[in-house]
Length: 320
Image 1 (cartoon, rainbow, N blue to C red):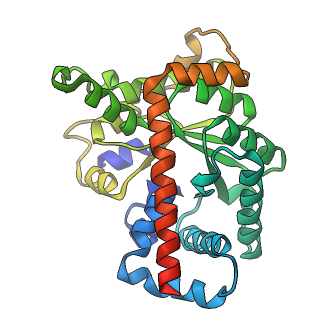
Image 2: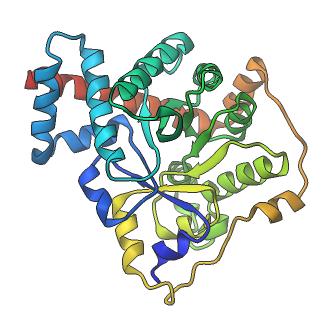
């Protein structure tokens, strides 16, 4: 048994990639994409025919709809390989507009349904975990459109997502780690802040325990990993979305060399105690503002995804 097989005993393994040709090697249950991953994939020569085909079929449509059709085409290819769900992201430039997010999500869902996809069981709509994004997700979930709230860095975001009834959240382990390491500078002690002491790991553990303690059905999917140690420290989390590079590394490591043990367990979480909390909009915005790391990383993530969305549009326009 390798470490990837060992992880699968307790955790649903998800591939974090837009490059669907990589998926067969790792047999993930689900797959996640984002604008950056799709942009990276479409710049590879082997995906050029797919982009050209989308452009030929949908020439004359508005650029934003052409992009959505490209995302759906990638999603359908991914779904032909994996048994579970694919996450497809709404344009990050809509992160502060709940109405526009809902409308774009509904269009993406309609495009998947037109391809014969059972969107109730096989699709998650990814939305940034801003206040407006969470409100959009609340409205989508009421329609039976399941959501994956991304760019999640703080406890208040997780609480609001649970209260909104979202299907799944993606707390970003690696980016939390990055911020704390940069902030500490020369004082950072890598060994002392590894494993269960990693700030990104601690954030996910707090959210996981809180959800299990209070019977919140929202699934927790750790994301954005920098190393296998972070993954091992979250073995037992509902899901973990992992890059192909780290999936490959884990698949080559015999579990006997460094046996994985279950780090997160719902029964153990329920045995602990915490107070149920809620955030209205002013309280949410204040709590997020008080968390410098979460505020900075959320803004940075939205800017980066928005920039890659623009690059993807330019690529499509140039290809046309």
